[in-house]
Length: 426
Image (cartoon, rainbow, N blue to C red; front, top):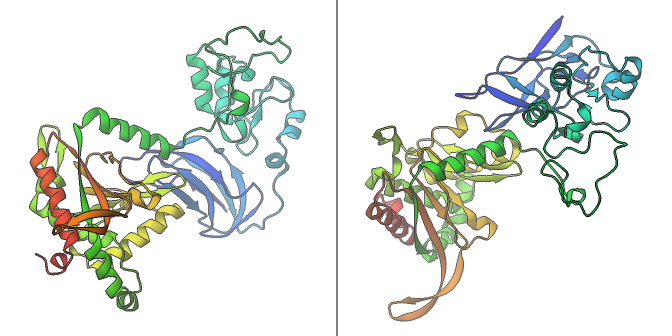
């Protein structure tokens, strides 16, 4: 029995993904529920598992290709025993020798078609080859941005927009004489220091981050207000109760639970900071889904701690630890990235002393934490060394007035400097 491998539902408003990596080659054994292919969306990276045990019989969509929800990725021969990877998957150059150079048959996805431009040409992915054939393009004039320099469909589309060649493609003919060293480089020629540069195509996640942040700059009237907090009382409280907290709850008492609770108390007093703009309306939210920014190798993601106002300090710490681990392992679900009402980001873990965080649309505000640094402070007329942290609140001035923003930050500061108020709900 042949089992189809299809693109699963990717979550609300997400209809397309990019094939990031095949974990198996054609002919290899797969086990039920084993990850066989990785998909990249503009929000998360997710793995598609095998529905049955057997042998990977066919790969239809190659790495770097875009696919829509429900698209067929490949086939598994259920119950069949695996063997060594198919020769075509391992040695595409041998397959090329068996076919005439002018053959129009589309190559299999696991064996990208070699460009018909002679020795050393970049490999061409199937969808890209089809476009090249249909438009009579020269593959040697198209710069490949896929894995290992492969030419993707997007590369060909870009070349079509530029008259049949990539803006930064090398000269078409390998035997063509190079331009004199003194001649100025044309806009479509190679970069001056290209030999010492590395060109890496942006992932969907990185492109989404760039788009959303730029959209925030273009749309919101962003303004940042600052304050500082004396962390003495919080550090003393953590030191006093840390061992008992860990023993009872199995998780450390960190800073994030205090900042989350302090932010929620301030949001309840100043609802505009927890709101958003929807067309001509302001939407005030009577729930508190706190986004916690997490840095990963793929980029910044903001998983959401839902209904954080109903959680205890221990539950907040456990929830943040779990979301952080999922983020770093690339295991976050779409649901865990949606529905946030307010975001907290901690640049202090990287040593940042002060910065201006950028909004996470459609939210109206984001709180930035920073590095704790001992500084001389005047306390009751005396100079004392205190562990201080700068706080930054970036907010959308279209919906939040300066008075509300400053008051919010003052309320957070007051709660953190007297953490018993959080415990007593004062």
